[in-house]
Image 1: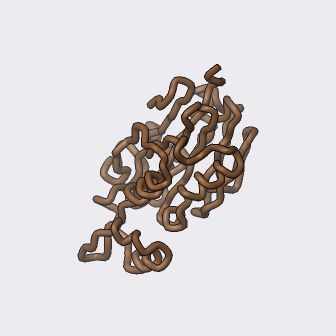
Image 2: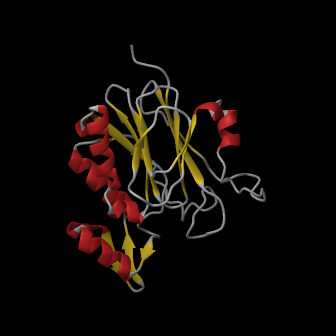
Length: 225
């Protein structure tokens, strides 16, 4: 998947050696194959709404990051949550966000656009985004507590819930699209794949809580000049 000439997106599938002890929890071995192990940014994710600007490889405590440096491979790990990849009109910025239900409820996608504007001077209408594989509204059954939490903090979020016998189905992808489209960001080529339905291709926390994670990476190669 390649949204712009100088920007690459990667998304991993299940490890063929699924008996491996790390169960695809580490990205460094895969990144080494792609020549990215020395410029990898890995987020220690906690379902927060914390966004960090980065300028060098390493680990950070955040659920979203962005950079204006070329050559940095920004990564996110998911196993049902929504990975959101960002770049701007001029391909001078890349970013990535981990949006589970808590992050989505906290509008982490909007926090990303706000922070990019304040720290990098890039307006939200100059941003493009793509959604990677995540659990779909077909499979994401949540309880009354999640519905109430969204309703109390974000009243119009009720539009993203469908009531069912055992609670509700939540459409995380639609919720994040709503936030980003309202901010003026433009959607690129997203992958409309449900990690739960496609359990043979991707890891799904709902299906196998103790197994691996899918990795998404975005990297910008040099400038447009």
